Amino acid sequence: MKEQRGIRHETREKYSDAITLYVETSLSIKQICEQTGVGFSAFSSYLSTHHRDLILKRHNLTEFKNVKLRGKKGQTTAAHYKYKDAIAACDSMEYIEYNISQIARIFNVDCSSLASQLRRHYPDIVPRREQERRRIGITVNLQYGARKWSKEEYATAIEMLQSSDKTIEEVAEACNVSYTGLREHILAYYPQITRNREEKRIRATGQKVRGLRNGNWTVCEPDRETLEKYEKAIDLYRTTSKDVKDIVRIVGVTLGGFRYHLRTWYPELMVLRRGFDEGMALEQTKRYKKSSAEKYANAIERLQNTDLPTAKVAAEFGLNPETFRMYLREHHPELVTARGMIRTSDGKVVSNRSAEKYAEALRIYATTSESLKSIAKRLGLTYNSVGGFIRRNYPEAIKKHNALLTSSCDKFKEGISILKDSNLSINAIMEEFGYNESFRIYVKANHPELLEKKATRRCVRTKVAADKYAAAIEHLRTSSDTMKDVAAKFGLNLSSFRKYLYKHATDVLAMHREQNREKINPTI
Image (cartoon, rainbow, N blue to C red; front, side, top):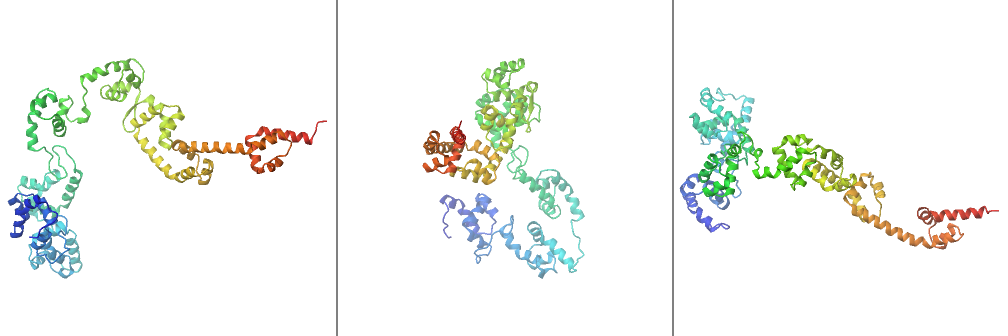
């Protein structure tokens, strides 16, 4: 046998006997696995991966190098190559005059098996073939559809399959009918049952609820070893009032393992032990210890006798405000209601006072890209308080804000880039790109460093200009020369000099104008 590369020595030794039987006998893979004690799926995968040549040889396909080992999903290699010619004939006009039984005899295959292959893997061939035969006038006096006796035999089984999650094998056993016959009956006349059960399997994928089926269509149950391991612990949990820690100490199992076993397989027992009615969800029965009740007793009394906010009462007694609120909602809902609490859109309970206080901040935050810090500062609110309020109670507002922020980032991306790399003002950029005032708000909220940079540049430019025009301004202040003469004398642009005076030296300009008027109209 050709030595295969990439196979571990232990793996090769594990499957050596199975490979020998596969080569030297005609036993099926399932029979080989039963005799050698290896897994069916694992051995099939090992064959496909490392011994493809043996598979081809067994099926007399050694002359093909690129042959596909499976023609259809779920169809075995042997079945595919056994029936492929007969199936091709069923789909060919060359054999249109023959029925399925005749084609099966021509190709020396079993008629029922060929029909099963067609129904299971090629369901479109038979309807298309029968339609074509009717079109060209080929008719036979045969009864189509399920026979009356067949319908009667499988009626109870079909009803059970439609109304329960039992497997076909379980239903066949319960109704005392042939498993193979029932399966073929379903495939032929009740394809919707197969589709519905497949959809259920998909929905149940990953599901782990005791008594219900998972994606493999097996009922979720703990294995026998696990049941035996925790049997005594479960009995003590059910029949005594002992604490879980005491139970695991007595039985000798781990605390984490037993708690997981309880939550996974006995949630209804936990609900009953906690004193709640059967049928209530486990997550709704969270219990607080006696020490917790004592811990919050004084704070609750304080709330009952005053109008102080919950947060202030929590701070007064050194409590975590969120944990305190959770305890109140769980054990004192009437107190929560009485203190003017309201429900958010997702069912959370919040203080009406807080809702009113932060309403405007919430509105701005959810409808603009302005940062929360900027909003809080503008409205005179504490940033951490309003931030915590929104995070706890309005997560949807955060999603909206982030979406707007992303949109604004994309919208103002080019403008921000120009603002970073040029000396243009925000007004100039807004005019160039057609931005509205929201651009200025966005920059202020998200890029304050650019505003500081622009302010620094303005200061620098102002100082440079002041130094540039200082001597000319002083000369204008102390002389009677015209503005034009002063500009020429100091080598300045007259228009720029005039603009600077209008903006930064209006007093000098006014004095100069007064002097000129006196020259024109001297006092007599």
